[in-house]
Figure 1: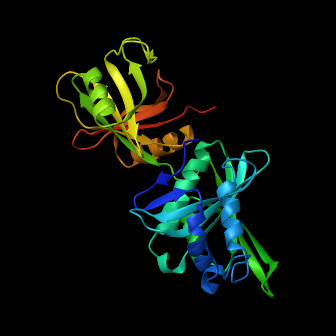
Figure 2: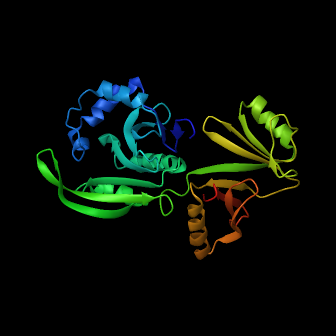
Figure 3: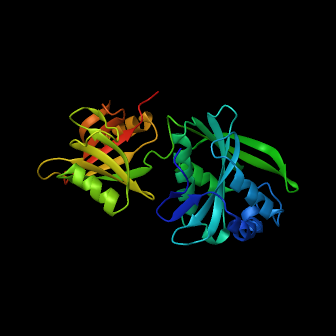
Length: 307
């Protein structure tokens, strides 16, 4: 699994830090935020909880709490929790957002980022439940592909009353946030010169190089041959591909599963998209289809092949 943090359009999803205590205690102690949650207000032992969250191991069985902060120096505004089962194949999901930041799509953005990360790790099922009166959370789960699987009447005794519970489930093969990443593929005239520029001048790290001629990935010690390379810095990745002459723009769209690629293939074909190449396992090991937009932009939609 890639290192945290994960940066989205407006948010940073990261580990908890000692400096989060005050903001965490404030939103978790808000009676409206805690109304449908299991804890009492004011939230007890906030500093101990934040320290526990910061020390937890992501992906290990048990709960891991992701801190959700605003980009550009913004502070903590919420958290997303994932509890991995002992079998490491299924998990539970929970989320909390400060009242001042609700209603702006932040929770959906944060949960979508966490779900994409969890499904890429090999989790096959994610479960969630909420108070039946918590319609905002129920709508969020449904937007992200969760299916309502049950309704439990007067099931939970919480804060002096019986509550009805809604049960939701998401399977890796039939739901979830299909599109989770986009990488531009820049067509270059000299791959070696471009890799050197991005690495030596702009400080990008070279992830890998693919030799079209040899049909395989190149080791660092091997000479660079015309083909493709991946370079990255911070949270940005670029593909560099050596091709002669002018070429249309190319974009890589990342999908967690092969089933997701197939699902988009069927949807886009029915909507009349120009499918240049249907899904297939490519020589470099990815399951990929290619779609052309009206201006000839090539969309390369890929995932790891089905296991």
